[in-house]
Image (cartoon, rainbow, N blue to C red; front, top):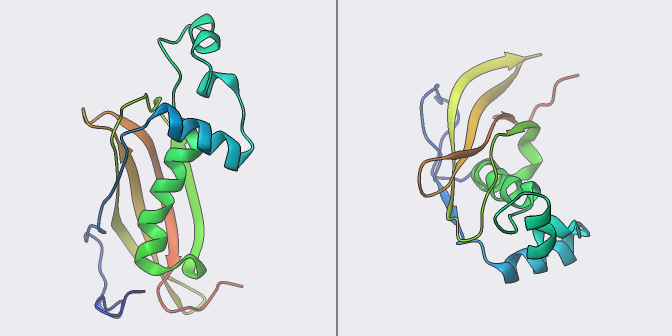
Length: 145
């Protein structure tokens, strides 16, 4: 947890700092395919994408998910992340600029350890949602049994 943010009095409501990423480029998709090992041609081959009914290639869902996960991990540290659930609701297209955000929706206790439940969202520039989900983080470092 960053030192300037106290978790002792954390309540539902605060927004975490947003992360913006992009715009998505063909080069970015090719590099992500290489590093992730996901070489599905719908992400890197325009002819294949069009034959599959798309206008063009589009971003890997996990590319956007990775940016969304950064909102939580940069706020509290990956070591405090207990769970992260996401639902992919629309495609991230070429040239999209992704804005990822999170908000504390609940604080609670598990076996004496403090937790926060966060609502996470990835949007593109026209406010179209691409991913929604929830994350749970430990506020005090104690893990549930």
